[in-house]
Image (cartoon, rainbow, N blue to C red):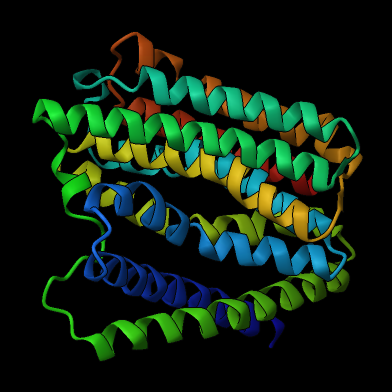
Length: 316
């Protein structure tokens, strides 16, 4: 039954996160907040809400392995699996757009996270540093967005935030918000408790469960989004989704969770998992800077690397 409870917690988390995004987006638009700002802030934070609640709950439950493993494992899965599987389905023409700046920001955030991990604990100091970096990134994104808007070439997806419905009734907005605010902590508590019990049942560290079961589960929304983007020939959306998600995971989720409760870093992270996360991110260099497209061969290699990594986590 513990696996059923873990799956139920994950489903509640994903549905509640989606409800919160819809409610928050439409509330913000109703009170006059520009769609551009909604897209860059509320949607970005809202889609990361499940991971955030999991990390906070895990930190409070003294299960730092699940909190940190969720983020590190998700970032690794986002590159190797979330980009690998769509590439197996169809060629992603990543050479048709530029993501140099956002990619370098993601690498910078990854290096900052690794440097802080070597302090041995993510505490309030680490949290403030990560959130300060996030504020700088968001401020820069907003400046870029305003500049593009003045130039008249702001991308359509910024003008049409995810979940936006101009005709949504107030009662629906409040219902979505209520479902999200109630469902997120409920789902997070259920998933973290179940994951901890699974770890104890099989005699494996909670770090392993965080890196695998929890991380893979919370990467499912990104996988679904990226598969649909690849099918629609929107490679910019696919890789942009991964870069944005990875950046928020490191800076926002661990930043906030570190302020709630200190999280000790398992030495296993320092030996293997952080470096795998960094290496996976660096694998994107040919596609970001050299105009290479992602085809079936790339998808097969990325997916195989992820399977190999999961095997290492369990058996090494």
